[in-house]
Length: 258
Image (cartoon, rainbow, N blue to C red; front, side, top):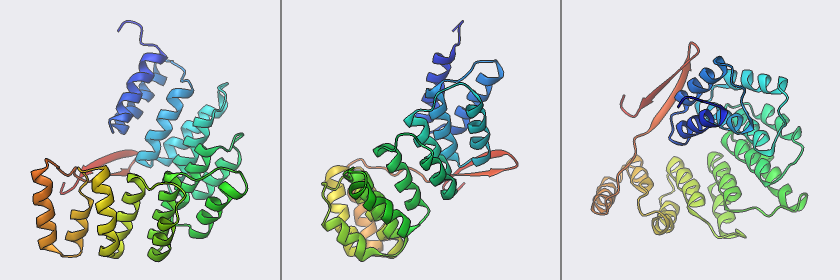
């Protein structure tokens, strides 16, 4: 292209992020700024999302500071991205502060904060915000919110409470809810509840391989082998685990067994 404007560059940055190439997205954004192209609200949301996935808090804060000095108007999507970035980087107090500064506290920003508390294991605060959604703000929780609370209870070893919440959901559990429950079952070895979740999840996502991991973690090798054979017969393959670590102002990515 001859004219690489903010729209075309934003499209490319977005493509990198949606395909998991978060580090390349940030490099492209820095190149965009270096050649003097000012960002818009769309690329700001995308870059904050990449910072959250890589948990590069310092870069995200520098980027936020630059945004605040610009003449761009804050949007709900930007507010939500700021809450998410701080929460994923473990700065739940900053995430809460960003939430309190939002002008419109809608279901998007509430979800971001509930997810943040779930990821950081703050049980009482997470429950408080979850309850206040309906009682204070009149926002009915959906499957995503229930998944957050189930994940939160699972991280806090409150499996009975998670089961009770699941049985009394106002919304129909979706794949995200069952995945949250399965993750908790894997950590705490609750095989009975895991098999219930798996049956439901297998109906929604036949390609999911989470129960195989649970069997292996609990040393149920025959069950694990049986399930892997079933997965293979259905053409299901597991994606390798992927992690990032920031050292010396550089992000390093590695896969399982690297």
